[in-house]
Amino acid sequence: MKLLLVRHAIAEDAELFARTGGTDAGRPLTEIGRKKMRKGANRLRSQVERIDVLASSTLLRARETADIIARAFGDIAVLERQDLSPHSALDSLLVWLKARPATATVALVGHEPHLDLLIGVLLAGIPRSLLNLKKGGVVLIEFAATVEPGAGVLRWALTPAQLRSLKD
Image 1: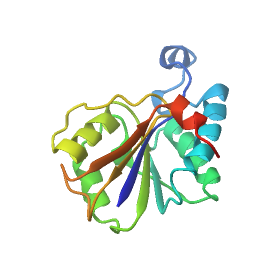
Image 2: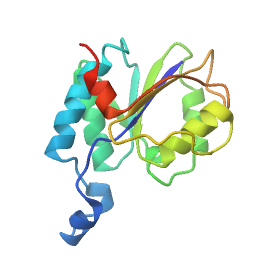
Image 3: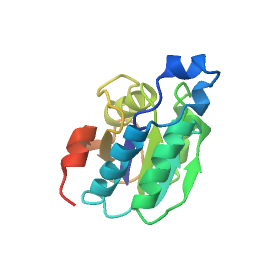
Image 4: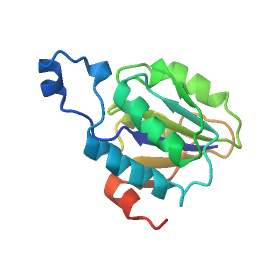
């Protein structure tokens, strides 16, 4: 399996958004965040031929990021998963990932530090921070067969700027 982990793009400032009565779950991407993610998603196609399953956190900023990726890959469907929310336990997400076909390319759009802890589990078998994904950053982890803790191989990690600088 190929597993793409994507941190949501640049969102509205949390404190400012809260002062206007907004909730964290409803915090949207900024216009700059959308623009940068559109370019990054289009350039991601040069590294990943297809995405078979695209799943997102239920929080608006992650869903908007996933929708941008979905459009870049031919309007694929986006699944919302509660276990991609920032403070969710990783257990149910790992069970779900194990059930995906070994030949699939799966993309997950979520948040820090949740994604970083997931990376630690997948690469080293422990929920420990190994990377710090920037907003709009992407990691590709591959598995020889099914997803198992510690069995992943890091193929690449791209900052948002590196992703946007790739050739079409």
